[in-house]
Image (cartoon, rainbow, N blue to C red; front, side, top):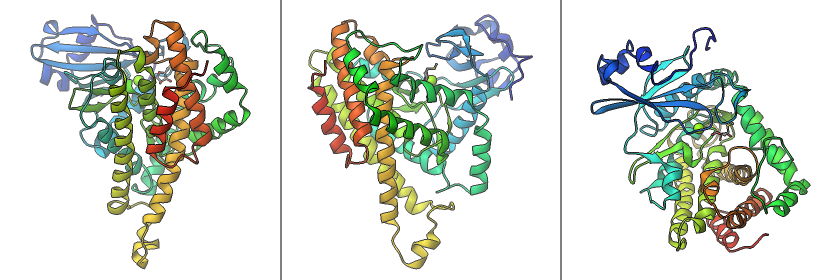
Length: 418
Ligand code: SR1
Ligand code: MG
């Protein structure tokens, strides 16, 4: 674990000397740090991010700060999140090959990870706000969620390995605590760091007055905190995806923890839905792009189910649903897979609805809505998003498939809730 004694938050002036003796870096950038151009470009909520360039080559350096960057030193946060991010990246690289940036160097004392620089990739959230399409986005992301979910679980892993890994990740208390508070709890009461768009008060009051909704959200939190089905990315929003028009990479798994199989899928769908609902503020004729976003969600869910089923049929090597109980006795295990996928879907829909709430009500809103300057319009669009989020939590067990989800989105997209 990181020792506080040798840690130093780095700057563009001090980083070069730190990296000058790291062969994984000098092999790429050369041995003259004075020739490197270093800039800090982090615009996320937590960390320092540097681009280090030399001639045609470049690297990314991500360093954890001992506090939440968004808030400042008043909110301390352990440096150990870099340790878990590093471990998560290594696992994701094996489980979903080609899906994450290559790790070139990890320095535990500095809570620092050196990674491949993705270019000309852009943060997906920016591309969605700008109305740009990414080929095969849904199918790739569904594949990523299925592979990491299945291969990180005891459907695939040896029990001893999986349980050791649960033990390793259980040391991470502070990062899950952020999600437990900001995502699952704060939206539903008047928490100190909350904020919401003026005009949304009636919708917010309705959510907080809905006891059944809060009961369902708390049950989902219990699953999130207690159910160690698989290793999650843990923060799979459109700011954790980088893309060109044809290539996609998943970044930033510092919220990795063990949790429910449907969590990442649900959080990701929520972020596509928030992009969907925000579109009328970003372009004059939003319908064609909104249709594309709904098609991305459809592709993601179909791809998730197809890849999960494929792995079920070909890689079911763990202690769960063993072939000895089904195929070896001449029995088809497909109904068992279908039933499990149904449970994952219901969980995903619940997590999706909750994520749609928190990004408008607690700390850390998303740019899809935040960049809408017209407050009245923003409130109207956020109200659609919040109302659909509640419908998802309430109807998660009944919503049959992704076509039903797409129809629900279309209905809410024309609804007036203020
Ligand atoms: C205080 S951290 C706020 C949010 O940023 C991260 O990306 C997570 O989504 C977290 O909830
Ligand atoms: Mg992040």
